[in-house]
Image (tube, rainbow, N blue to C red; front, side, top):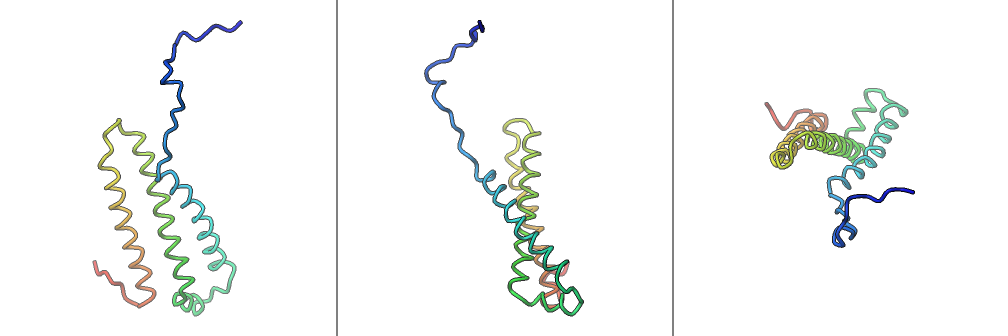
Amino acid sequence: MAAESPIKTSPESEKTSSTPVSWAWILQRFSGLLLLVFLGGHLWVEHFMNTSAAVVASRLTHVVDDSLDIGLLISVLYHGLNGFRGIIQEMLPEGRGAWLNYAVFGLGLITVVWGLDILWAFWYHQPFLTL
């Protein structure tokens, strides 16, 4: 016969204590799905279609291809930086990571602007930022 647990629980603790799912967790899964779509589209366009220099240059003027590039940039950055933030947050002591969200958001914003600057340089043959 199995021994009873020596820990007694109160009636309040027997209630279901469901924790709400965070938006970061939901968006991490959603960005993973977007990554599959955008990366699949990117691989198809860049590796299985005609990829001569003239065709690639003309592709940079199409809204669909531009949306594919921008969507891939944003979903990769969000997914990667949110995962990085989660790993660092688990390593920090409780209550010590309030600054981390701001730091990762700032890094993501700078990287998105930099990536859009690179795409802008392809579209208009000059970057909008001159650093």
